[in-house]
Image (cartoon, rainbow, N blue to C red):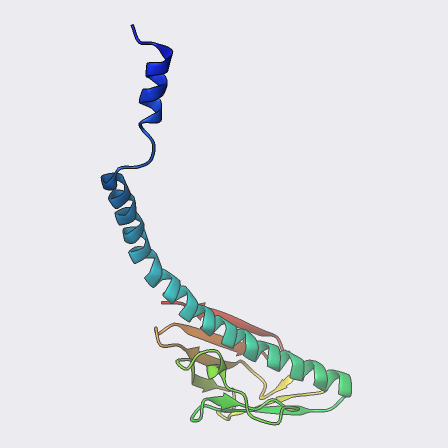
Length: 160
């Protein structure tokens, strides 16, 4: 028959982890990290694209609101070749690459085939029709910003 003091000695002698258990846990953590890190990078790169698109939407919404509140027309010019756009009231042209160097304006499809978008004092835009701006990042993901005649602005993403 085992005495209580013997049982305490057996329990007390089994503390901690063995080296094999530690190596197995470390290996499992390393495998999970190897799978997760590329996914986090993908999310960060696509997050930069979303941030750039939202920045452009915000800038255009601000210009539209300013045109309405000041009862004055304002124009923004998109320069696809230099990857930037102007916003009335800012000293320098803005670029979606502010968020990441791999974000580019890859398409400016305005209804009149031009590059200028005018926000009228009544809240509508010129040229009338559907106007789109396409941003692309280094992964091939795209954000298509659509500005309708009534001044409604929204974005659609195609993430890779």
